[in-house]
Image 1 (spheres, rainbow, N blue to C red):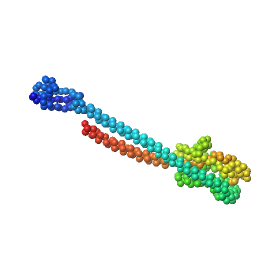
Image 2: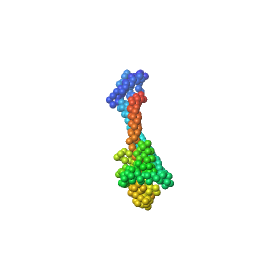
Image 3: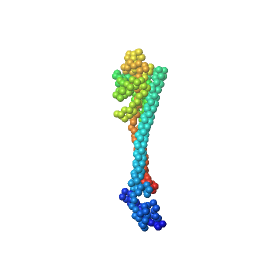
Image 4: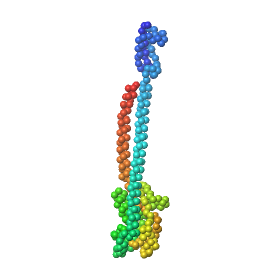
Length: 317
């Protein structure tokens, strides 16, 4: 059988893609095409037989691009989620730590008050300290509440008062922990202990709900406020009770200040710890900056690998 040359010019979507030379007769072609020395055959064929078309090449590349884009979006979304969760977790842990610290300080202050009260009841302190303070106040001519307190602070007796001993200890511990310690109440004897509007709200909340502790965020000063209520004990009645608790004072306490008429077991005032939130917030921002830097590095690395992805796809084709 004579060899015949069949030239196949392959066309797909008006573009030529190859030249196929057949060095033998083609039995499956029509006779007219098998006769002669050469036959030119222009045909449009299915790309699945002779290879992928340019359109499918572009489609494959678009698919790779979509996969990369989706991967980047998933990475970015996961990073944003982790970024938010980390912020929330760190913030909550920091607040829990502050509350634990505040609780420990106020518990110690209350323990000090109770201990000094027991010593007063057991007459551990020299009884002459009170007489000494009374004489000193008399010599200074102090008559008003403010004047009496100002003079009394200079006496040795003042330091044996249970509540004074407790806030002295509390302030010392809080100062070392970088917190602010306060003893607050409504209609306090000293103006420095008078409750502010937000402290009044907290005291009302404690009294209304009967809780042992309460805290809230003060947005105005950017701080966490923690309170532990002060409950009147028997020893408190000497100054804050009524005539029956200190008859010789005729309504005045041993220092000469009008007694409040409170009863044992009542809740009046609270120990308060004020924790500045700024250090915590600065620490959280630092962690966020570090996470952001790590996230940006990961995204840049992924973008740099895009050309490698396309090269790998091209080689496979």
